[in-house]
Image (tube, rainbow, N blue to C red):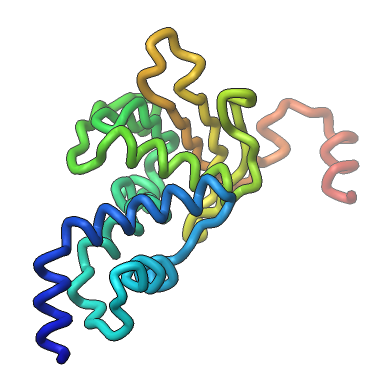
Amino acid sequence: MQNEVKFFIQENLIQIEEQFKKGFQTNLNSGKILNFEELLKKTLALFEINHYDVSLFHNLKLWILKITELSFIDDFLKNENINEIIIHSNQFIQIEINGQLENIHIKDLSAQELQLTLEVMALSYNQSWNFSSPFASFFINHREHLFRASMIHYSTTPLEVHSKIFLRRIKKQSFELEKFNLNTDLISFFEDA
């Protein structure tokens, strides 16, 4: 029986993947972000599959991580030297390090996947971001890395091509009062506060 299920899954994997992604979009449109396991179970139930080997769906696990966890820019998010990440499209990113912009071309991300990613982010942080509210700016905490996210919906561009996001790293640094050219009375006041 188990071999029959495995064979059925392999024969119908494309349809299962399409249904999985469609289900993700449908739930997102309803204001829900299902995790991988929930969505896989619901998807396979449509195919009347109740017992399965989850390892057969590794690509779907990677896909959902790309959409919900920004795995396609994970290295940039972790790099403390990067001050800002600007995602212009599904193929073009700029990163700012020490005032210098570096252009990066990315692969394996469709325009629809980028849009889904941004919609997930907006929903995750309770932001209204759509045709009616095309701008959003808010703080995010991504795996203990703090950023200010500013999003621009594709509906604001004349050709409605791509939404954009600017991720500005929030640095945890304190400044010495002496560097602000304050008089000694003000410095004492702030230090005593």
